[in-house]
Image (cartoon, rainbow, N blue to C red; front, side, top):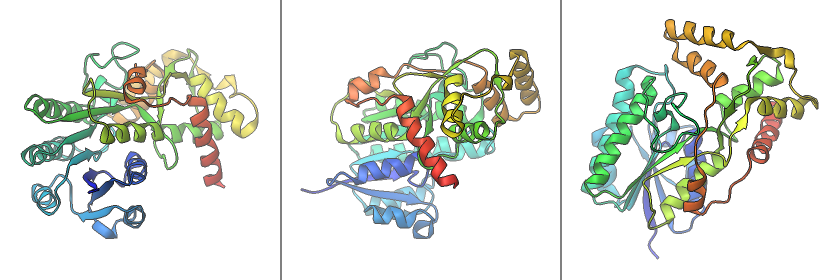
Length: 329
């Protein structure tokens, strides 16, 4: 049987590495991964060992895209690559990479009549904190930073191509955790273990996602045929509270709950948020907002429609804690 050729962008990223591992385990799939530094990229060797083919260049470069599609007859495109996080780049860079790059891939994929295009977006399209919780797929979109604005624009491009006949899907992961994470959950772990995390007195529900469940979502979309919707939210089956999260982390290290004297009045977080907004520090404004508000999403339909077995956050996050503790030794 001829293998399905899949063009995958963002293979060297946190989500990308897990998606590659999952897709490469299927005997009928062959991955071609675009890497900026080609086989000189630090992750190239592990990708090659997994069976992937490396194609050198920037995924958002028109000529690179054309050359890739000329060399390989792709059946599917899995587009994960993006500049992530507010404040990590200029507005021009977000547009060039996250928006224009997506549009160019869509244009070529549509012209070459690929069977499927799967785009990795973010729940951030609803804003750092959604207008209503639990947020639904239809909840109003809010571009409250440059990253979120770029994802909304990229989703608009995908939807336009869907209307024009392209078989495309959008995946919106919430904040991921797992082996190799260096983002918000990993920062929480380090702050709690050092007893440096300050929490508001009011307790909030937050919604993380095990990166292995995200990889499973992409896998099911790649190998499946027909789906009743175009947008899927990838989150753990239920939200958790920040208090529980801090207690798990602290108990894992010290055998007791996180001390209550690290809790501050809610007004202190509101003031900090306003100050970071005033100095235009999007990264820290977002971090304060995530600690002092509820943010969770409806994602049960994703598990049901794709036939994925949910794993409770406590179980999956426990594995993450054990892995991070071993890595820190």
